[in-house]
Image 1 (spheres, rainbow, N blue to C red):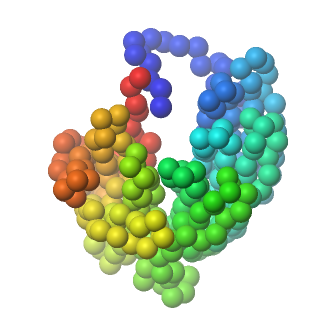
Image 2: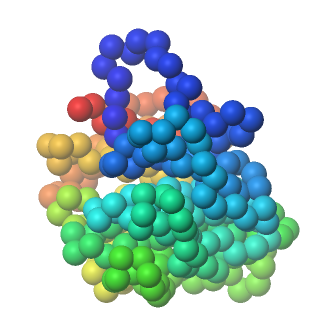
Length: 277
């Protein structure tokens, strides 16, 4: 959420741990840097007052760190992914010095994390839904009401009738909460295996039930950004051979329109938007 205004060349050395392919890096509000490796999952920490990286968590069987999040109380969370085994979430309450496993999801991946206006935390999981023979299939959003200590399923899409049956959604593309507290969820690639790429984005009620259909286009929104003025922008996922769009969504009228089109086959990355400060 920080942007370099003059785009000058900068020294990135403080953000790089030598000899490690970093998959994700988070700068905590304290200034501490947290990095997780791409493979043989390791979490490393570099405080603002120390030039050295220190490994604070390792699990060689966990694959990679895929999700990083800091909540309003400065608790840190990292979620994992590895095909064929359950993803999980670790939590730190001491600025990344130590970690505790707090949630094991039903699918192979954690994906997105969000916090509502009451401080409740949410984790969505991600399944390839038939792409990988050893993938675990599940489509849930989990909620914690106690700062990430305990978790329960809050929203679920129907699971496939059997592994690889391809009779449900392929995965949850996005879960976001705007500044008013409204929750949104996108079902990605609803009918992708029958040749029709469709994504549906819904408002979600506070009890985890589906509300109004917001949008139905492309593979569905995979990126979500709310600017300081309340304007909401959505970016679509990959649809091979298609023109992709940035959509402007009006939550008052529940309408959307394209504000930018990109004739490119690769779609809009889930972390496309950068805030100016």
